[in-house]
Image (cartoon, rainbow over all chains, first blue to last red):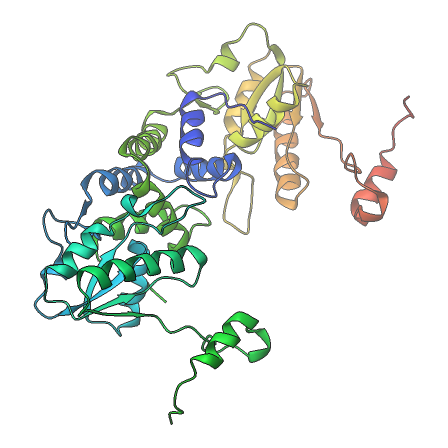
Length: 206
Length: 206
């Protein structure tokens, strides 16, 4: 049942807020009521942060990650990163996830999605050509395909692998290990993962 | 685990969005990523709606409901509403709820909360004095206390009832009927409600 608002300002705010993912009119109204209860500064801070996020953010022309500055991003420009390794990820969030492991010191390449015939997303809609050009240009020893373990990820990885093999066959292409999740009991590991982790078993380490 | 963002703009947006009620950093990041994926117009629409909601909204000096205009709100000014009945509600949302029933044609009075000794909210922090003045000024036959069925609501209702009794004893004070919810089975009705609905049973209607 659609709620009716006596205020057009409230109606606008609810309509706008309910465009956020997972937010319906009820939650949007809760957000709006919260903003009305707080002082104006809080609402303006949120409004300003949203507007600036979308209008001021830049994308690095090399790795296509988001950046606060024009031109090459701090990660791509950094002298302390290992410049011969490129980690290929689906999106900006994945870069954060990998950075938060503190295990990786190389560079990145953000595809901006995965090849998905069902959703009509082809290789040309992603940053694959720029990856191949970057790898072909030289100075890169290894490309790590750090995608999830889905059908679309497999398709995308295979496509990238073939492209790099053709243009820069000397470059090593690797992918994330797949297997039992750390902390998981075997009982709750699915059969496909179990089969794969058996086939790709590694020497025992203490 | 706190996520680290490479972008200060993203960090600001996530920090701002996570101030919304029920929104953590993870959801805020999902909102921010969504805004980055859509065109700039959508983000600016949301930002503008939030800013305008908080800065342009007005409160009616008579009923204290939100309004888009300065001065008396359209409901209070309307000639087609029954001006001798005032429905007292806790907040702006309650006005919408009652309007959506299409059962009420009188005026409103928004208290802006309920008396709550535990939360330190006394009668002076609510729009009770202005209600009593409004009722005392004349022209009002009935005051409907349309609050929930909580302890704070009971306290508030009793306080208002006593105040009106003292200042305008000719005014009828009523409250919402309490009883079995429409559509509810008796099995799931709590004992307090059941006891009350027994005590206040009404003539059978076809």
